[in-house]
Length: 589
Image (tube, rainbow, N blue to C red):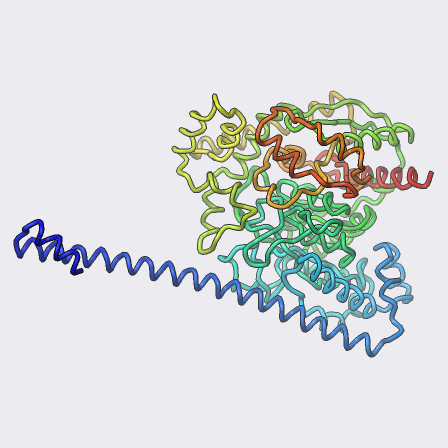
């Protein structure tokens, strides 16, 4: 303030003017101090919230570990290795026949989950109520999943636990009741026992957030698990869970399942209840997310769908069509006419992707199926359609949810454009177009829709595209589609910069076709050598990043994607099972 007085005297201002300026300066300083104080308080509050959530997780893991130790001391003859080696089908049969005790199964998986979390950082909370639930299990002994421990993604409501979605804004808001899916699982005799990690906001295909940190890949700790259902995929891939429930809006089940070497299904939207499942943008209707199962094998996925598609779900959520699981379709052996796609035309497949899908194509043809070429329609335009559907508000909902805390490093490159006004983005994309056509295109994909009229036009364009695609399927006379699944698992910090590979997965969210992934091979030394010569389509910055993200992947799982028309989820699973069995048989030769 003395410096201000000196300046006024040097300027020779009169007393009244000096008083006015001093008052204004004092007000500005006071205002600045208030703003700074609020900012500091906000940061402190954010840290307190994060630390509380981490402490709750730590406490639940510690209490679960103590319970496991107590049970093992009381039952020294229990053999966890035998239990953990069983498939879901074998496990349920042994539990049903009384050859295994639910308690032994539960504590075996609980111990394995605790150990895998130490290695992979894949859990957000142990559901401590599961220990009490185990004691009342006899009342649901006739359930299809009797005695099966099931993991659930963080955004699936479980009473008295947060569904954080990796966001500070959602902490300290425990669910008042179970989601419909959790209720149905419990009525079928399953034991939801752990919540698993997700990406911040769940609109990234990585699996890291500022609260719980980065989940890593069970096959290589220097790689991401993928996301956003990455905690699920990592835990199942690491052996800590036998069955899990995730959610998928652009590949969030299929990508981590493929990266972690397990199976995952994105069902038709509406087939399973979404009541009690959190989302960052629940009002968005063009590309809608859906819950779905992840498991070690396709039979595990099918059993989960069979268990969920029951009168309990139809009664709890009457908006779900009361259509039970079609076992006849799943068990069918009728030869299929299969569409075959090697590339989406925008993101050329890497050597390991090409080899994977060609090997499966050959096996299907040798098994008596008809395989015909297929090309997706207008993929560049479709990418914009997908982006403007998911981010129809220009990213405003996501930005709002991200307030109050820092951005996770994995998310920054993806969301920074959303902090610019839409008018500025449009100017920048115009200026960028001559210098970086793809950069301009990617920025255009963030601009959303500008009015209700444009929103309706967007909805109409989506419906038109669905009908065009169905007409193309009819023209090709195909039952199902075999297409690549990008991979292998990325190195850290690349997912947020690489949107274009999502064309392989998000298109089936736009179309609302059921789609699933099946692991079929691993990356070889030869694949890795050939990747060194990969140039991509545009030979630009993003193609170079993609190549870097996939490097050093030898030994990692590779998957293919199986797709069926809407509401034919059982046909999709049947096709996945066919691929899985043929790959198994080929390995025995």
